[in-house]
Length: 84
Image 1 (cartoon, rainbow, N blue to C red):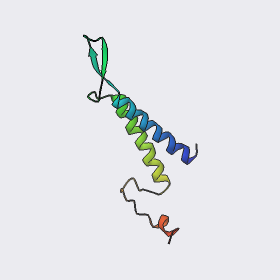
Image 2 (cartoon, one colour; image 1 turned 30 degrees about the horizontal axis):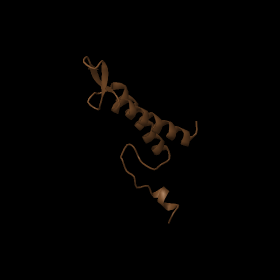
Image 3 (spheres, one colour; image 1 turned 90 degrees about the vertical axis):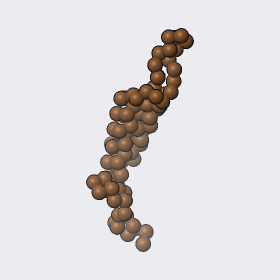
Image 4 (cartoon, rainbow, N blue to C red; image 1 turned 60 degrees about the vertical axis):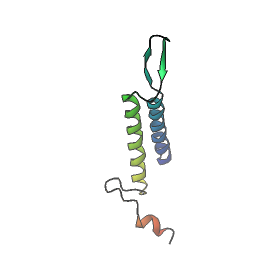
C-alpha cells in the first residue's frame, strides 16, 4: 500500500470512529419505543476507531518526515531545505 493510500485509510478510519461516537444511541426510551440520539454515550468502538485512525495518520506523517512523533517536533530542516 502506498503512502497516500495509507494516509487516506487512516483518515477514513478516524472519521468513521467519530461518526460512530457522536451518533451513538443514548439509551432506549420505553415511552417512545425508540432510541434517543446524542453525544452522551461513550462508545468504545467509536473511541477505538478514532485512536487507531489517528495513530495511522501520525505514523504516515512520521514516514513523510513532516512530524517527528517521538519528540512532537514539526520543524524539519530537510523539508525546509527544498524551499530555501
